[in-house]
Image (cartoon, rainbow, N blue to C red):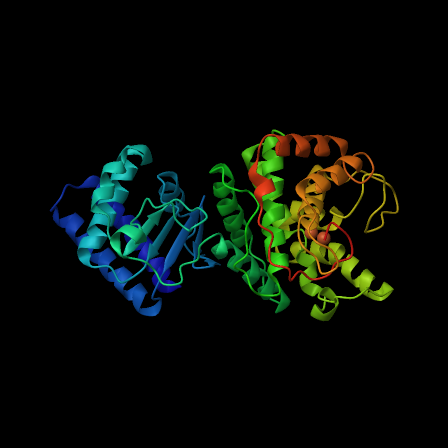
Length: 398
Ligand SMILES: [Fe+2]
Ligand SMILES: [Fe+2]
C-alpha cells in the first residue's frame, strides 16, 4: 500500500508541475522522472495496479486506500473524467509523459475540451470514466492498440467480484467497507445512465453463489432507477442504491446447507432464513455506523405495508421509504429469476403480482412509481436471467 500511496502523491505533484510549466522545463522533466520511477516501483509489487476515484474516496484494486488524509486530487481527477487509472504494464517514460500531458490538459481546460489528447494515448496506461467494462474507452482501447489485458473483467464482473469479495470477507469475520459498496453503486449508476439494460445479464457467473450476487446488483440498480424516477436527489439515489446492494447481507450468516437446500424448509430453517433481516442490520451497523439507512432497509425489506411479513413489529409502524422501494424491487427481481422450484415469471406476470399487492404488501405510491418506470420503456423486460442455479428461499422477496 505504501508504494500505491507514494505513486499517487508523486503523480499529483507532477500534474501540478505539468500544469504550471511548459514542455522541457527542468521542474517538469524532474516530476516526470519521479512519476515514471514511482509507477515502475509499484508495478514491481503489483503487476496491474488500479486506482479508482469516487468523489474523495480512493480505491486501490478492491480496497480503500487510506492514509492520504484530505487528499483533494481524487475529486479533481474524477471531475475531469479520470475516475480510474489502470497500469496494464510497466509504462515507459513516453507513456507516462503522454498521460501526464493529458491529465494536465484536462485540469487546465476541463474534461470536455480534452478530446484532442486521444490521438497520443499511452498504451500501457488505461484511464477514464468508470462504467460497466471498467473504463469508458477514453483511455487507450484494447481493440485498437493491442493493449488488451488478459482476463479483464467485463459486463460488471468487476462489480460482481467486489460484491462476492465483500460477502466472503464478512463470512470470514472481516470488515465491511463503505467505499466498496459505493464503488459498485457508482458503476451501476453509470450503466443506468447510459441507457443500457438495467438488469444484469450475469450469465457468465458460474458459481453457485451467483444468485446472491446478481440479486444484490439488480436490486441496487432497480432501486436507484426507481428512486431517480420518483424524484429523489442524486445523493439519496446513491444511498438507496447502497441499501439495495446490502439488503440481503445477513444471508452471509446463514449456513450454506440451509441457504442452498433444494427441498421444503423446516420451521427452524425458515426462521434461520428469516433472521437474515435482523442479522443483516446488526452486521451492517457493527461494521459501519454511517450505513444506518442500509441497516434499516436490511431490517425492514420483508415487511408488508399491512403489517405482515417479517420481522414482527410489536407496534405497527410504517417502514422507511427506502425499505418500501427496495421491497418492490426485491420481489420483482426474485420473481423474474429462475428458482429450483419454479421457472422465472414473465415480466407481465410479475407486474400483475406487484400491482395486486399495492396497499397490502407494497406501498401504493411506490407501486405507482414502479409501474410508471417500467412503462417508460426501460429495458428491464429484455433481461437475461442468471443460469438456473439459485438457492431456495422462503419468500418471493428473497
Ligand atoms: Fe431478503
Ligand atoms: Fe432480496
